[in-house]
Length: 421
Ligand code: LLP
Image (tube, rainbow, N blue to C red):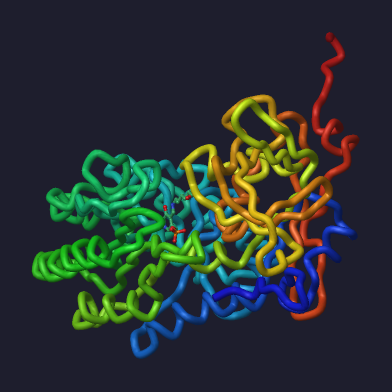
């Protein structure tokens, strides 16, 4: 459920007409609903009620300061994967004991930054990383709390580019070698082993792969405890999928997911962490764009809009589907058309949808991409020198620009011409 609904024939973001935002900030832009973000965060929080737990928002999905602040105020922790994300979380006021550091290639600089600033735990992904973290912790006179990310060799049954839990993926330590890696961790100075971490992929629409992975983690917990390790925290990753098409898609709910967690690892008495990104932010955002031209091709019609692959890369990168709807609600029985929906960028990959049926629209009409809150703005670039598009946050009948569109001068001013050119 989200808060982008038609009312009186026009699309609203909570209590604000989307067209009103467009008139003020220009197109294209992202708009997020505070109510949807908070609702989704709370669904996870409630799904784990009764267990000691922390929901760490995977901020790679949406990392604007206003969003992080909103979620942190509601009690969220953050899953960070770079020094930049760590700095963003701290700047947004997230307490450091709610920040978890994930990622397969943490540098010593990033380790130092997090150890000095404070960290809930590092999710360590390899032996070389473990040696590096041990050395950095000793050098700083600190103890780094760690979990080890295990790769359970489970097929997440999602797009290959976002599956992470198979043995061929670069992530984690093979679960078959976990016991020896934990033994190494226990022998190194500066580290405190506190738990296990697993994350098998993103946009999972079936609970079975989670179940397979969590059962393996439960078994490993008992083995490691028998080996004498303290396993008091399980980080179960993120990855629960969302419906990208309003019809015909009903992925499992956070409640179902919470029940699965209780069933598979609830008996172990561990503190549970999860790292959802997409389910919190995905359906909490739209990308709004304006039609520039409707162009007749040889055998099809192109809807050329002012948003492009640099603004929302998911269709080009993962063949991802986003529902695209007119901002003015089509009248019942309105004429339908079939379009290839494309942006202005000079490559054919700049295509959002092929052969998409929708109500007929024309030049200057606004269209909204649904489910664009996650991995939208954060993956944008300025390719073709198109400035990053603004982000807007709505709360009931108020809205605020939470990242402004840079002017051309601001964009150009980041370049530096050396004196010898
Ligand atoms: N934890 C870890 C360690 C992760 O690598 C990820 C996502 C998450 C949590 C959050 O997963 P989520 O709940 O959002 O599924 N750009 C791609 C998605 C990449 C996901 C990367 N890792 C997309 O647009 O579909």
